[in-house]
Length: 355
Image 1 (cartoon, rainbow, N blue to C red):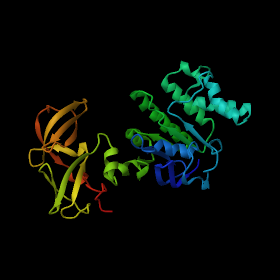
Image 2: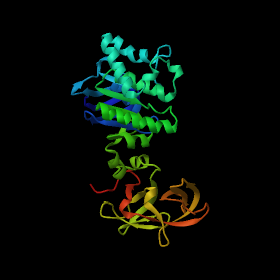
Image 3: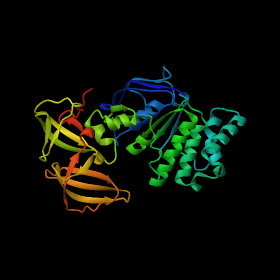
Image 4: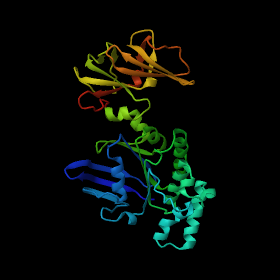
């Protein structure tokens, strides 16, 4: 196990800056997920940690020692790639042994490590097959096994489940989480899937355009997002946002509704804000509220989603347990759970929540 520190890490390709001075501390044994949209820099940052990309400025430290100029093979890390990167002409056993042979490890120790990893990952019946004879999920287990046998200080995962179907992704998420529990190693995992991030991570770093927008525990990011981007990215379905202006201790929404501002927010008269509310914190009501027209209904049996548009053509989604009789084209009124709402400044995007 090892801790990892990033100190003002930058990455540029010529005049183009892609990573803008990231500072981060990942403690020994933590499962940290880098999440963000495509092109945000998360895979580049992972490759800089691995030693596969040079660092333009700043410092990467493992257990307090700078590793900027240490080759990837000597950093004590192991990486699992999206493409599996298995040698097609080698058996599973040979794929898992190859890296250890290059390290000039004894045959006895190689055999023991490979056998233990195979037992742990339940791939013993596959050891004499070639990668072309394996399913996607089996190939991913082999790629993970090849990393496990190296007994690295830190595991690095670069979108390892993106090539798998939805059902297998769920199963592999659980397997990787279980592996982390058994080994206790520090793990850094890159994904664009915020559900993976929420279900697997001890800590999440939300990246956008080469900057960490927020770093913390999954539920902290969900419950107290620091800005509109994090609020909209973390959580499924995405948070609803409604524009309005602060007037007399309330938010006068553009769709005509008025919502009181609680003591948890610091706002000024006339401030232009966006009210954020999650789908599960909206309820159909008979009184005052947000008037909306249903544009779509999803019935999932145990829960339902209503997709609506307000009078200002703002999209808004509501969620309820159980089944619904609501129909497309129906007009409804929605009330907000005031204790669960968020406010963000329209111009800066920063949260108005009092610190």
